[in-house]
Image 1: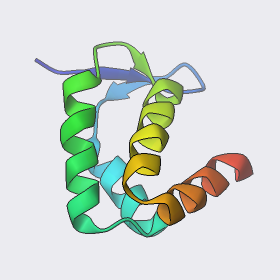
Image 2: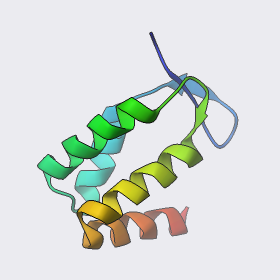
Image 3: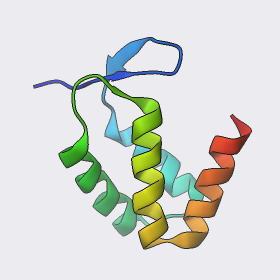
Image 4: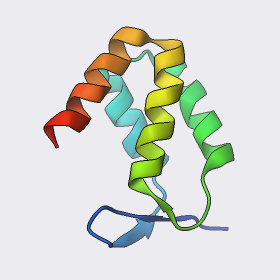
Length: 80
């Protein structure tokens, strides 16, 4: 079953967890934490979920695991 994600501009694309992993690593999360977060995200995403909801979920999970990386991840969102 493929899961589609609705982007901020309304376009729809397939769910790509590797994009989240790449962003988490750039924010300073460890590979282990990134994999843990992706595993949890995969259990919570559904067809038609928005990128905004995914972002909130990732930030929430990251805050619990690595506070410093979460601050950098939040900064990315603030600059967008």
